Length: 158
Image (cartoon, rainbow, N blue to C red; front, side, top):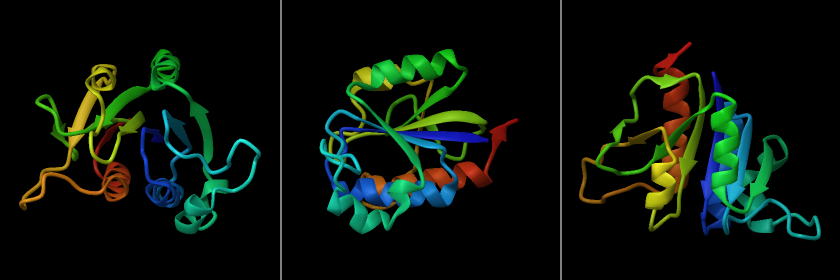
């Protein structure tokens, strides 16, 4: 099983740091940051303190790269046989416990707006976590934890 995470237009550095820490624990091989998602280092190579605060060093354990737009990244990985799996509430969304390919890129979007319709269209599949309470969604970092660990332990095609 191989997993890559794409974070597009995540605004909170704390969420990004938390996802780095979870990704490290879940064995994610790479995180791709796109749009205005904060990066672990600034343009001068200095540590981004708010990411470091929640990542606790995991930002150095998980490979990462920046792509201005996610489309260039997704085209490259689709061509290499990866399945693009958006994590979003959508009419075509499957339960997050569905059987997934062993080589997948999970796409997580903005904390308020989620994944844009254009980015959803680029996904091969969409999964969602059913909400049983009054709130319609979970925090993106919490969602990433649920998805990354359930994907390890649930079902995937060999």
